[in-house]
Structures are given as C-alpha cells and as structure tokens.
Image 1 (tube, rainbow, N blue to C red):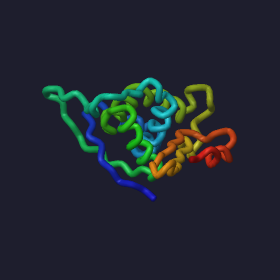
Image 2 (cartoon, rainbow, N blue to C red):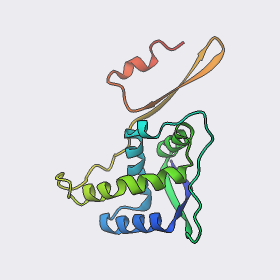
Image 3 (cartoon, one colour):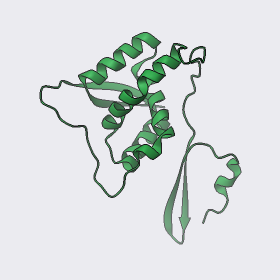
Length: 158
C-alpha cells in the first residue's frame, strides 16, 4: 500500500532532488525511500528528547515548494517515528538528509563508489511494531532492523 504525502522543501533541496532523479533515473519517491534508510542507519545523530518538534528555518527570499511523494506504508510509518524520536518535522529531516546523503546515493546508483552500480531495489530496513499489554498497560516495541534471532521478538513479552 502506498501513502501519498507532501513535503515542504526549499528550492535548493528540490533542485538537488531533480538533478539526482535525472542522473539516476529514480523518482523523487524512490530517492526519499533510500534517504529514509540512511537516516535510520545514523539514528544516533538525530535523537532528541524533552523538546518540541523543530521545523525548517524560515529564511527571507527563499522559495518553498511542495513535493508530492508516494511511500510504502512502512517507510511512511518509519518517518512518523523519526518525527517523534528525532523531534523534527518530516520535511526538515528529509531536507537535512538530502544535504547529507544524496551525493553518496547518486554515486552509489551510478557506480562511482566502487560498487558497480546500485542495484538493490529493496532498500528498506526491516520495520516491526509489536503491541504488548503488561498489567493492563499497553506497551509498544518498535524495531528499526531485523534481530538476528527473530523468534526472540515474541519472548519475554509481558
């Protein structure tokens, strides 16, 4: 199932995504999905707590654009988690990640990082949510990755 959503990004970020899309042949949505994985891999850089959600800095004379993307539901849900745990809007996270990761993604896709071209179309990290009830309290376990022993996910619950 695909979720359609809109990102609010500045002209420079949109331009970078446009160039990357042309160069790699991948849609904006595909590039965003790859970027989501990169953010998840570097989650310790982004963790914040005890603060409100931060949005992108508004700058004078900067053009803002709406970018419509279609994401697989687990990518969308993961971005919602990132918003909660990293205390940044999704658009803000994507803008930061485009600046940080997009060049490497383009190089991977074009085979410039000694990997003979980026061919993995199933780039998504595993994402699992398990609901437990412990003494009438609802507990959520969120996994951003796949444990070595997946059978342990259901052990020790409650």
